[in-house]
View 1 (tube, rainbow, N blue to C red):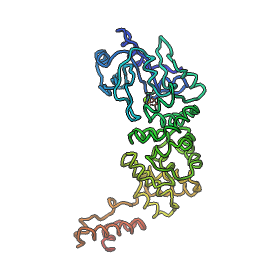
View 2 (cartoon, rainbow, N blue to C red):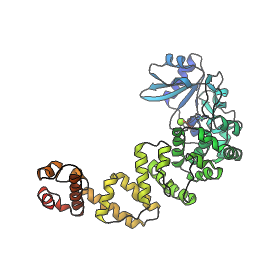
View 3 (cartoon, rainbow, N blue to C red):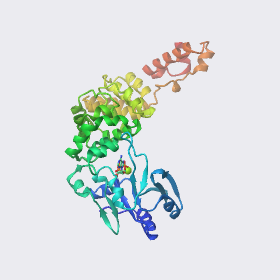
View 4 (cartoon, rainbow, N blue to C red):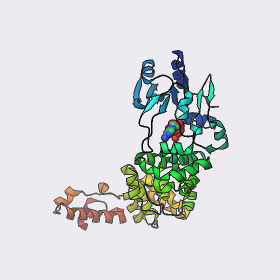
Length: 391
Ligand code: ATP
Ligand code: MG
């Protein structure tokens, strides 16, 4: 059994010392039960936010509307949330209001899956009204209560079910899967940001074969903001299983046979992710060369680290390891010798060309590009005198 951190025990005992109840809950309890190390510690309590704030010296109002206060202890953050029940759900999205509850069981009953609806307190032990511990043991994801009702309340839960399957290697209960197939369209009511978050976690999971559930239930189309998935999902899944759990790499493999730019934009991925993933997809589709000049051209586009990721993706795509190792070695040598492949390291700049009588603007831009190209082919040309002679 995993030790609960002292800070968490402290928060619980401070709350209890003035007559409140407090439990750890959600992901951390799920992880303890399955013998994994919890990532973060969420606490649920009968105390209302103002009472929580009064008991600790450093707190933030993280989600005070939903009853969540962040308590800061020795620079660590702990989320403390008041027991709550959710009000009415509008448009298959989050509840329109929340009400604080008195009993831990009420709070657990609003949670999505039985495996996420277990609470634990050091002196009281587990509170597990929906059989979550048994479902963790059997590796099953099952809604708390009726799947159709729970997915109608919040359609994101459908994607979360498959996300947890991908992270934990669990199966999804057949009734729950049936409800997903039936209610999949409702995912259209969910914001791009919430879908993006779950889809990314799903793709980065240790068990990417869960992606087949996205396809078999028909949820895929809605997870991609109403676009069909193109590509051979079977073979993509087996590539994903061998790919590091890196967001950009996993996204690139997933979208490797698609025009993904629009989807990444629609899902509101950050600019960097949109750019890097699209470039990975673009360069995965074309053969890679071990020619030193061609490698420098790629290093203009990618950072060294991203370039190494591209090479790893190429191996997953079936390129011979020897060729990729040779390219990787060549790239390292380019860096070791500080060979120039950017305008910044060119031995002449715009001012030098202006002094030599080249007008600024497009003509100068083209001239600099031409010189850089020559230097990328022959590094010995990278000195001012030689370059000015080439003009
Ligand atoms: P992770 O380790 O990925 O953070 P988690 O279980 O902590 O997993 P969160 O998304 O952080 O997942 O949510 C914390 C808890 O809040 C869940 O365990 C679940 O009990 C509850 N929860 C989160 N989202 C929903 C939802 N859409 N509907 C119902 N309960 C939810
Ligand atoms: Mg969490």
